[in-house]
Image 1 (cartoon, one colour):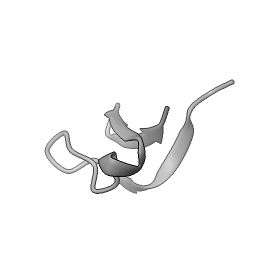
Image 2 (image 1 turned 60 degrees about the vertical axis):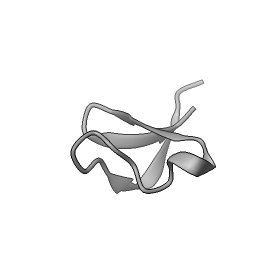
Image 3 (image 1 turned 90 degrees about the vertical axis):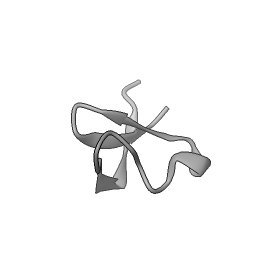
Length: 32
């Protein structure tokens, strides 16, 4: 399936929830 969008957008290519498995993809933070 598709990645789940996290609760934030990216800020300068970084996600605040990266430690929870979220990564920056096309200005959105997605859980992979």
